[in-house]
Image (cartoon, rainbow, N blue to C red; front, side, top):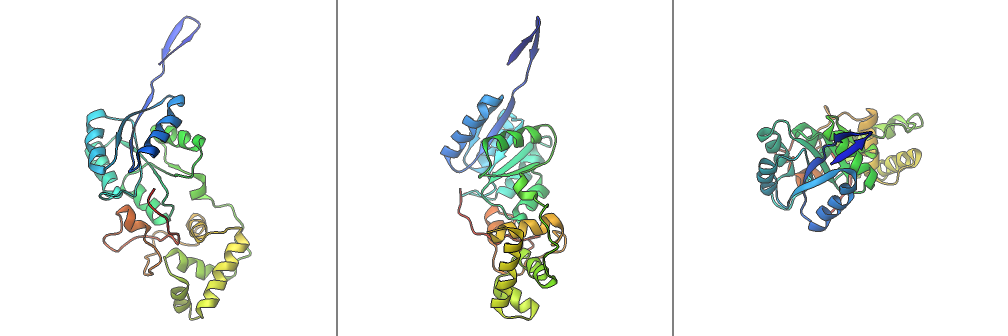
Length: 248
């Protein structure tokens, strides 16, 4: 692309991308959104193996990929991409919002994480930030500005256990209280913080330091997102999400 400024021709390089996603319609949508902003999709892939082969063939600036793949592990794809192409930039765009998945993807070598609920502007910004060498997290994933002063110590305890993937019954067992009491602690915490979903509460817990990614090892049965991303096969996920989502 060339832009002329007062008799000077300046070449503006496009950002080239490869899109890895199970669904053709999503890949087409990403291509449509990015094209007007000087971001070109030069290759597409439906499986991790295709993505790795095409990344080696086409050398895209940024690989845009879902971590939830129907074939293979998205986390392993990230690891192999950055191992085979050390300068490769990777942006995850997924419906999986659990902090366990986000953290595992970043530790595997991804440079950004956005949700499929992102606006077009957020997606363009994410690609640009990752291409520029920055780490991008969609604002929803790092929100940490809600007031926690109204939370009681018991509610904070319940939140920490929820962040470990505990069900309400397991929170009750850990705290020595009835399941309905544990459920009440979680419900009141949601209301005080203005949230409606347990996932939002868990993300908030890690963003504010109520829960620690370094010290929370889930022993509950409430989370399956990390397994879907392919990062939980060893049973040592660092955190857990309380939401249940479908492949997208």
